[in-house]
Image (spheres, rainbow, N blue to C red):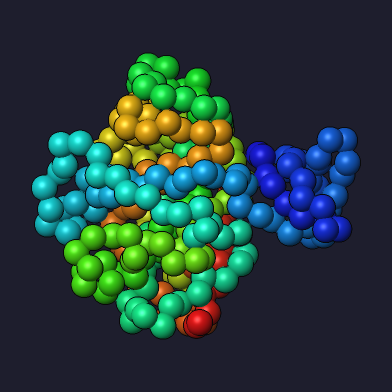
Length: 239
């Protein structure tokens, strides 16, 4: 599993092996490092309404093509860092997701070739100010606050078509699904998005959330877990 981390003030790229992080031959105990978001994306592309059961939960029709939106890179948040509840919102919600990490620059990629441009997968939390989303009638403000895009803890190679995904708040299971329920699978998303915009190495594509979205409150701890990737944990604090 690939990680980005701080050790003694140095930012390093490495991998996890057992209880250690290894970077260019150096070994650092995991208890002594600070995890960072595993990439520095030029953009974070998100997909809305991409689980069949989530569409049914909302009473919405299955979309004919992916619904996409962007989060700014400034919304990225490290594993373990705090989600900050903005004063402007009274209803901030979690959305646990699996995210694709792009391996190299690409444009107009076919679904058949998409795998060649995927570095791996990670956990993602599409934090959303739901009341602002309803009020604005579009999604930019509601999705873009600083700290509203936690992802990590690592990038791993897994089967994206059959990955268990769970979200817990204060240890209570809130979302429990599998990526086999995705309406548009990973390869189709890569083809669709890369035919709209150039994707750069390290860009993140969050593939949508399953049913069970709910509110976060100050003092909460939210976890997104994907088998084979790990657990993304973030506490929640007021601004």
